Amino acid sequence: MSEARKRPYFKHSIVQLEKLFDAGQSDTHILNLLAHELEFRTTDRAVKLRVTVAEVLATASIKRANVARASGATSPAGHATSVIAFPKEPDPQPVQMGEQATPRKSVAPPAPVYLGELPSVPIPKGINEPSGILAAWIALEALSPQTYRRPDDLAAGDRSCVVDLSSGRMPWGTGERSRRKRQLYYQVVLGAIPMDRATEAVVKAFGEDEEPASRAREKAAIAAVLVDKNGVPVEENGIAVSSFGWALPLVLKLKLGALGVWPKIEPKIIQKLDDILRRVDEDGTALPLDFETIEKAHRWLVTQFGLPDELIEAPTFALRVYHYFKAKNPPEAALLNSFFLSDLARGATLVGQGSAPASLRRYLGIDKPAQTFDLFADRTTLEKAVAPAMMPAARWPSSGGHSLVLLQQAAVNLARSELADGDGIVAVNGPPGTGKTTLLRDVVAACVLDRALAMATFEDPEKAFTPTGERMS
Image (cartoon, rainbow, N blue to C red; front, side, top):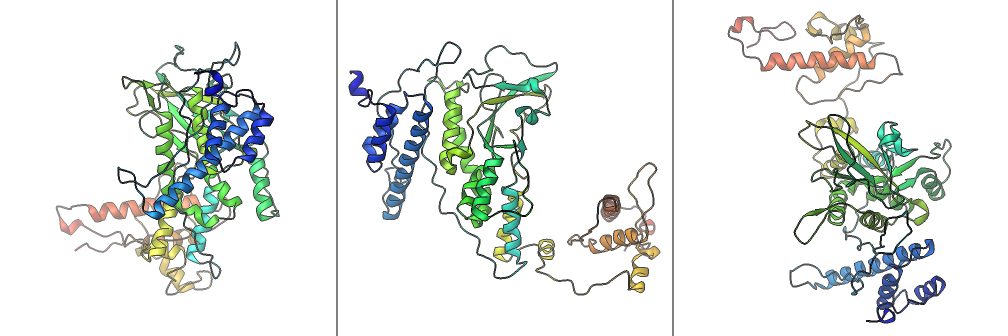
């Protein structure tokens, strides 16, 4: 087959290809031919156009899938029909990028995964509504990613751990040696979002903050994948995806109410990334990660999340990870998100279902205390709170520690009493350096001893006493 038949736009300039795209955005056949031709082009304009074409094809594919789903059309396997258009010609040979660069080809990213309609949290009718409190907290956590200024910031400042991938060369498979008593892994960062650009976009959407935080030169990773010394992705917990990359486009579209579904979205994203990154040969042998696959995963994430081109940076580096050689499990991918986003989403679900536990209900103000006391003014209540019978039998051990002051001891005693039934919440507020941590340690020590005494089995019941001095029955 001649080159002209395989590539009908072979002689077209990038300007002509752009005009073809503008005129044929509704023609899937033209878009497929453009996508195929752009696989052979490596200029910045060609790469940008290739990504745009892939996005349009992906959007068209999802629309067809939704129409098929709505009409009840199914495939022979019984699943909703989803047509994803790709060139039918075999992959072309890699294009030589120069003597110093690894030969590689550009592959259009797979179409986005249909994640369902994103639910929205209703706008609160008043202030301090429980659902509104949790929605605001979830939004804050989703939009507060782990950031870095230089790649070595992700490796505790160790610049020797940073591997430059901009040439297309992969560090694995080169016989690189690990450190003494350590196993060598690599963590590949799948692109990043400059925080100054993201902040500027959010400000345009919501208005200027009175005290805008300075995020100059900081970046947030979009995702990361952990591979072994041979470049093969690890089996478990090897992929991490940032909620920030997913949440930012939603925020820019003023869809903050949808951020609470991230815990449901995240597993689907990770599974699809795993499908892209994990490859095998004809014999079923795992293949090492190459730069084309890294780029493919990055472009798929960008397309899936709907991140604008001006808010992203392509993958350029990996990090060497030195893991203790006797460790039973491999390391995990980097922590890119708040570690309690899932808990917050679960809490919001429980509140919506009316089945929130007592502690959460008290925290959110759903259940109000029967009465309150001002220990500064109510001397009788204060005396009861620090009576000898209320004193715990244990303190937190600390060398050279100081005894608690009167109100600290009262707080420990009241917290112990409040939590005696195993279900409750106590709030302690105060400026830095006022003894909150010291107080908390004594609460922990007292509660641990109380639980140990309650669970203990005594041979002589006559010797069994409660922490308040009363004989146990």
